[in-house]
Image (cartoon, rainbow, N blue to C red; front, side, top):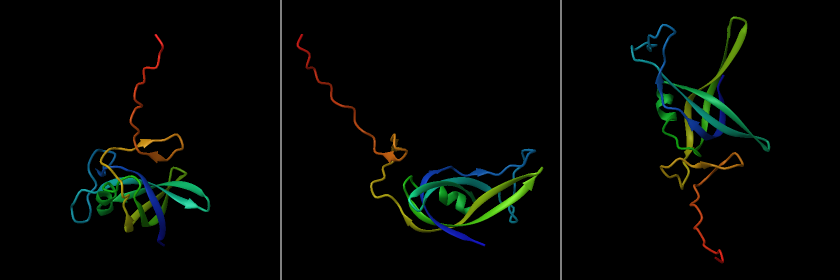
Length: 134
């Protein structure tokens, strides 16, 4: 079963090769090294913003790292759970990006984080005023 969600990109990591515990690299069925990255996004659940980290593998790993912060997109993903030593781990794996809306005023510089938890453009320091009477 696939799910679709509209998310705003908060962070995207660069793809890295997937390694086994012994240090060897996982290969796809075509003999190509598997790559993996993560995309952290925010979506609205009613009037509350929720954050989710998606795993991106192979082709989506390369694409996810190109989205600037603030990009709004629809992601189609699968949720997978697995058990290991009595504990369950759940992963949301993206396999498709659609309706990509990149922010209009995105600059190459990383935006400064504001106190409200969102992102605000960098602010220039105030000019120094010499108003002392002596």
